[in-house]
Structures are given as C-alpha cells and as structure tokens.
Amino acid sequence: MAEFEPKIAAFVCTWCTYAGADLAGTSRLQYASNVRVIKLPCTGRIDFHFIIKAFERGADAVLVSGCHPGDCHYTAGNYHARRRWTVFRKLLEFAGIEPDRVTFAWVSAAEGAKWASLVNEVTEKARKLGPFTRYQRLNEIAEGEAER
Amino acid sequence: MIDQLRQRARELLTTGEAACIIGYADASVPGKATPIVITRAEDADRLVFHAACCNNLAAYLTRPEIRKLGTVAMVAKPADVRAAFVLMQENQVRPDDVKFIAVDVTPAGECTLLAQRTREELLDYLVKNVPPAELADDALKDVAALEEQKDGERWHYWQQQFSRCIRCYACRQVCPLCYCSRCVADKNRPQWIETSAHGRGNLAWNITRAFHLAGRCVGCGECERACPAGIPLMKLNRKLAKDVRDSFGGHAAGYAFSGEQLFAGYSPSDPNDFFE
Image 1: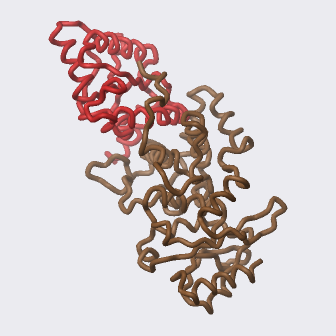
Image 2: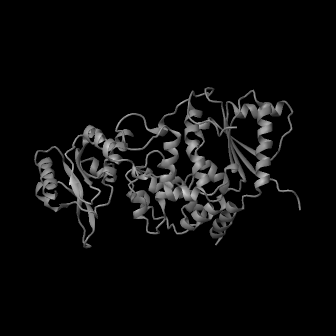
Image 3: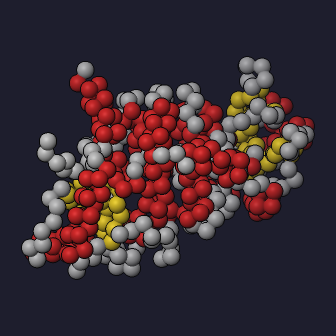
C-alpha cells in the first residue's frame, strides 16, 4: 500500500508568510508537496471557521502562519489573531482534536528556508498521526445524508 | 422582600424613571416563573422573585421591542447584572438606559432585595461578594477530569453529547450575550455551519457557540438549562472561562461595565509559546 500522504491546508497572510513561501519557491527549495496554500490579507482575517471547514473538506492538518509579532502590515492583526488562537486551540483539544493537527507559526518574507522546513515538519507530524479518520467519518455521514 | 421589590418597581414606573420593568411572574405551571415586562404601575403586583426565577433577564435588553421603550429597569440577579455589564462594555446598551432592581439569593436560600442601585455600587457588590460561579473550584472539577482523558476519549464523549443536538438554538436564544441580529448559523452564503443535525454540523455549531462566548460568558448556565437534549454546554463554557483566566491575567467577564472587551484588544505580552 502506498504511504499515506496527508492533506494540509495552510492559511497564510499575504505580506509575510505568502512572500516567504514565494521566496522558498524562487530559491528552488524542495519541500513536501502536501500543503495547499490559502492566501489571506492578514492572520487577523483567519476566522476559526476556516479551520473547521478545512477539516470538513478532508484536511488531515491545518497550518496557520503570518507575520512575526510587531511586523504586521496592519500593525496589530497578528496580535488580535494570537489572542484568539490562544483560546481556540485549547477548545479544539478539549473537543478531542489532537493538538498536532493544527500548527501556528510566524514566518516572515525573508524566511523561505523556515517555511520549507515548517511544511516538512507539519507534514511529518500529520503522517505520524495518520489520516484524520475521526473527522472523515463525520464527513462521510454528512455527505451520505446529503445524497439521500 | 417581594413587597419592597414591587414597591420599587411601582416607584420607577410612576416617577417615569423607567418605561418598563423586566421581571418575573408566576408561570401557568405551578412552581415555575416566567419573564414578564410591565409598563403600568398597577401591574407591579404581578412581579415575583423566588428560587424558580432562573432566566437571565439581560437577554431582553437587546431586543428591538424593548430598546424602543427607552430606559428600562430589570430585576437582576448577580449573573444578570454581569451580563448587562458585558452588554454595556460591548456598546450594545447605553449604560444610562438600564436601571437595576438587584436581587440575590443568600447561601441559606433566602431571596433578598439589594440596597445597591447604581452600576458602580453593584460592581462593588459583585467584586466583594460574588466570585465568578463558572470558575469555582467545584465547577471546574469535571472540566479537569475531561482534560485528563486521552483526546480520543474526549472526542467520543463530545460526539455522544453533540449527537443529541437538534439544532433548536435554544442555547442561543436564551443567552443574553448571543445578541447578533443575524447569527452566523443562519447565514448560508457562504454557509460556515451546516444546518443539518448530523455530527459534522453539530460539532461546528457547538464549537462556534462556545467560542463566540469566550471571555464573555458570565456563567449563568441558562444555555445548559434551556437545552432540551441535556448537552453539558457549561462544561465548554467553563473550560473557556478557565483558559481565558489563566492566559489573560485572571480575566473574568462581567466585572466591568466599561473599557475594552478582551478579544477586541491585545497585548504584546500575550502567550506566544505555541507558535513555531
């Protein structure tokens, strides 16, 4: 059987992490192709519904990344986001979602290498956890109901 | 006590200090109470207060039909006062538009009318006499017990609980702080929360409800009481209250009627250890 390839949804801000991922590309860095990058204006724009929806659409892990604290293009979007994630990640864990399914990071536009190694790391973590069968079981039931 | 409460209500209505009184009246079912809004002084005798008066009456402050009446007075238990304070802090009601007929129940179970009337006096009363119920050590025991379990067990536990959810949204309707005129659960373009009562939709809804109250929930427990399926919603609320307290300098909701709401602000020294 082929090795399990996790699907990872990455929500990134356009100013830092997206530019960092771009740098990784233009620098010809090789990294895991499991990640699907979704670009947003700011980490402050990343609603927690995005994370839930990613799991509903079959993601095995989610990565959230933006500008380092103090470097937000909009001054404080990442600070606001950080305050929310501090609590939200604990809530997900409390609901029974493994903490390693959701990773938070700061990756600047200059950190192409950090982006590459971060994606590899998140992919490895997801590979170890295996497919997110708990959630995918919910998805099967929900989609089965929709077909009926 | 009830005579004093009715007298105060009559006084507020006859002097015109308040256009209406939000309080409790005996329900048609013996031993139960129901919320009531009175606008005439002669109706003050219908007001009651006893152990069965459970609704959080702050939920009515944001209703359009109440708003247009102008200044309102509400019979308020400590949790109702806290909820009203959060509404003031979030600019949902004008502080001067709300008058309190504050009541409390002593540890011995005796209902009393408080002498405190202004929000400053009531804030002082809350700080000195009413520790947040949702953060009481006893109340947090079941949260800790669940935290100690493996994530698979927690998942199974909540899936069992949420599987009973029929999406009636009673938890939302009864909550004084779920006041959005259009709830995200009712929007369908895009539809973030599926309306079907299957495991996936129920998980999304219950996570959303809990998280939207993070740092705001005053622990009145009305959501859990209103839930026809008996889902232990307060366990989620208490978990969030505890995490918020531990992460943000002992924050507890409803102990201020002005200033910045927790998630409307930030601090450069907020926790950062979970970021790669």
